[in-house]
Image (tube, rainbow, N blue to C red; front, side):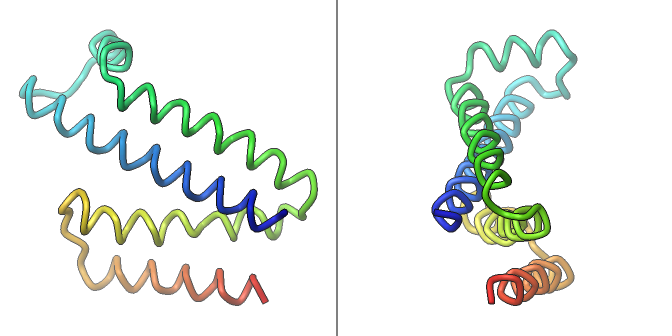
Length: 119
């Protein structure tokens, strides 16, 4: 059960972050400037993907609460760092972001830590 909860936490967090990043880049490109508080609230209310991102974050939050009920925090927090690895890879290939060698090495080190933790 811990691995299922961890997978839900990681996948919903990654999906939420990708949706947020994608939508905000589109919104800033369309508007030509950064958002103020009111325009940000308007964007959240009118963009489906931002609403979906918020829903994903809620699912992630409740799955994390369920995970820490059954597992030590010393497992749950480092294991959920898998989001860093997935987000780095997906940002490169889905969002076409530049990922330099230093950032890739950092993500690889996080992955190594997760593998050590899983043993």
